[in-house]
Image (cartoon, rainbow, N blue to C red):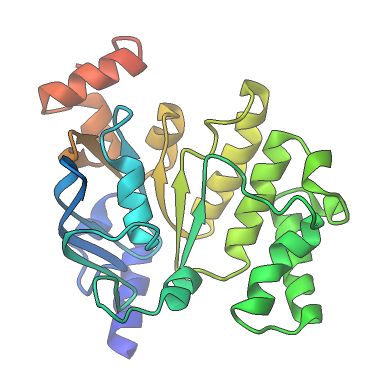
Length: 271
């Protein structure tokens, strides 16, 4: 709708944090979501808005529910109660079109999950050909463009085993982008990488953020979170216990749990 598109343009033009007060609907709207595995409640009444063009970072200790929340947004997990709407798609409906969700929501995991028997080019072009039914030539053309975008255009004929971990993760990012998603989810994308390879993946993610890609990122890279995010959420025990701009959360945390966590990961620099 024209009005929605106009509101999205307004939101994208705003400085970090200001989009929270924009008019219109959020691209991702999470309302009172709960999720349990057996007797363990992993998500407890989680609510979150993400505006188009915004980078939201989820931080917290392992087991706090961050990755489960991402998996619910991509329909890899079904939530028990609450509501999730992504670009007008209600994920809680019984007859939800999973393929449509996967077209709108790209996801990059800790492990690269590339097809070992396919070349880099084929790994990227496969989903658009099957799900979007794109002709091979068009899918491969976009795959080459994306490989150039993530800085490994020369690797199109290589197989995953011939690539470094950082290169494989960049292929995984390109593969997710090939579906032209409305939002990209990143689940600790650098946690499986050697330290010298982390920077090259974070640089790709910075470039995506600068290009206006909507991103929800689970990460332990606090420098990246402070620098790139528009909004930060700290999760503890399955709840978002504190959220705000990077300056608010990192420099003046209000909740003792947030301050204690940041004090540990930042070497005592948090209040």
